[in-house]
Length: 311
Image 1 (tube, rainbow, N blue to C red):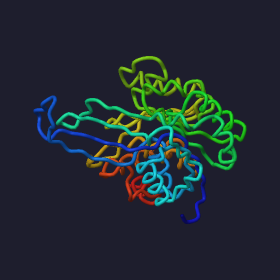
Image 2: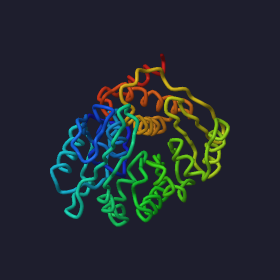
Image 3: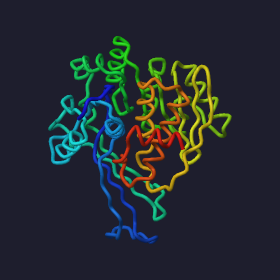
């Protein structure tokens, strides 16, 4: 990887993503049905790491994979895009993490399954041994797959070294793990369901969403961004708030858009951009990803995002 001005440490999940969609409306149980089956590399932390690498950031990733063909291929792909994997764990205790999503014929999600037991290998002790990586990073990006004890150790280290944290709540079921640490989070990027889990109430309209973003700020977060899919996003800081519409783009695949936004927000923060500029940069990265078939757009670059902002 060429010289990078910024250094990021990313901690969390990486694995194999499988998507299954039937070719016809009629699906017969207990039979093999014709379908479209696609696979790719995923995991929120892995996606954030690759996006940051494509934004010319020096990235170190802490994740865990199984000692299997999948884990070996995953780590090889990460190294190919310039991510340092020296701190990753390879274990015989669990297989490499995987996520399988089954969709309706109209591509709407129906049900999903995941096996992320391998993430338990990222222990407080492992992070403590790697505390120098936290000290040397310009920013730490995390997902909520980490255990409560591991998160506690990580936030203790980021506080000790005064390293800012950008957090992606990952899912509504996991978001609560970040709640105790909101005062130590520089930026957080929940979607609507994750925001509801963080504030403990349903968000019915724009007024509720705006109030929820401000409530996260009142809890200690510097920059709260609630993503709303095709409706754009709402953001808040202690000094400003607002609604940002999405960039107009032809939708190819929405997978990975939230992870691209989180990565671009982290990039904007370490670049010293204003909150609104940072949020717009994240929106531009999400739009670029939505227009790609890949989970992480291979054409992503700072120059491309700045061009979108100018347009």
